[in-house]
Image (tube, rainbow, N blue to C red; front, side, top):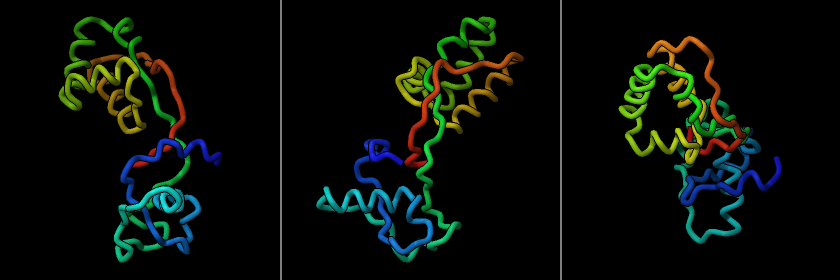
Length: 144
């Protein structure tokens, strides 16, 4: 994977020191460890005794990019006013008002789990047609 994809490495991201782990080549915590060793003075380390060093490790995060959605401004135009009001209320109760509008206008990426939540909310308010988000992009999923 090109190095540019790791430019979004979060500040204080926990790292794993088990370079001998069979999952190390594709684990974001191990990749972050190698990167931060070169640049950071202090590291936030995952307790080495908690890592299982196999596929069942609770801290394993795959380095494969995931498909994120960006924005859903077109939903309102394709829904009845009552449907949209109910949909918006469901989403605001989940995330809050400002985070809802950040997701709606595309200022915040929508991870796959939240995309599923939005699709379920659409079904709950009675939307039968398939709704597409404004745009899609691949990004590294550092936390989910």
